[in-house]
Every structure is written in structure tokens, then in C-alpha cells.
Length: 201
Image 1 (spheres, one colour):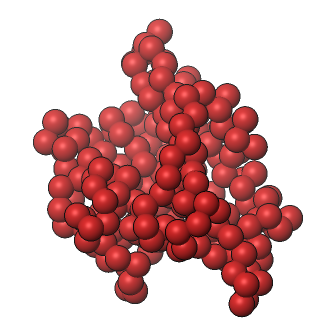
Image 2 (spheres, rainbow, N blue to C red; image 1 turned 135 degrees about the vertical axis):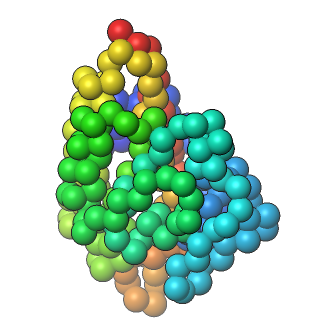
């Protein structure tokens, strides 16, 4: 499946997540460039909101229009609230993809972040490599392909970049027998990010 992602974003970079490899902690590090000891986000409930400086703030200062499209009440929907960006909280992954396609057509945003969560939901209910979890992963890859195709077509006149970012890995919890994450182990910490750069045509 990752080969299909690399077809759209061929620069493949192996990275290590942050500790603990929990979603709000990871995204805070991805979009601030800071370790958890600096940004202070911890995996607590209710989902925290980060008030420090982020990539989104830097983009706003540079007069760029930013959209965050995420599943309602997910970590990505909550952790970066309160900024001068456009937020789109959607019912689930299909609606996230549809919104991103609409935003690409409208053409008013310089940066669009899309967050989907089916794989994470399903692997917590089953295991990381269950048939259901792998189908969910395939859905993410297909959504990425659809968005990448639309992006390349509609934004052809511009230099552009597309990225696939994963926040953490997962493993089987010995007690529950289901998927989980949050430990300092390779299964949770090893991630791959994919980057694609295309010139204006």
C-alpha cells in the first residue's frame, strides 16, 4: 500500500515518533517542530488545545490561507483550534475527502491539512493487521490518490507539494488482544512520511 502512496509522493522518509506516541502529542510535535517537553501537550482527556506558535501561525503571518479538515472531535480537529485558519469538522473520512476536493476546486487555500481516522478506529477495535484494519488502510490510500489526482490537475499552474504524514505506529496489547499505541517500542515509534513536489506547468 505504501508503494501506492509513493507513486504520488515519492520522497519516502523513515522517522521516529515522539514519546509518548499518542495522537495529540505527535501532531503537536509535527506542527510545532518541538518535542513534548517543550510544547507540553500530554495524552489527556478531554483533548487538549495547543496555544503556542505553530506552522499554522507562521503561515497566517505570511498571509497564507489555511484550512484544517478533520473528523469532528478528533485530535486534529481540537488541538489547533483558536487560530486564524478555516476549520472544517466533518462526520467521518468520506466527508473529509469530499470537503478537500471542494476546497481544491474553490482554490482559495494555500495549505490544506486533511485528517482521517478509520484505520486508527478499526485497529483499536480489532488488531493492527486484521482484515478490517487493512481495508481501512486501503481506504486511506485510495482517498490520498483521489485527492492527489485532483490536486495535480486543478493546481497544475502552481509549484506545489503534497505530503502523507503518519503520527505513530501500533501494536497488539497483550491484555486486551486489540490494537493500541503509546509505548516506546519500534512498532509504535517507527513511522514513514512521504513527500511529493511538483513544478508549475
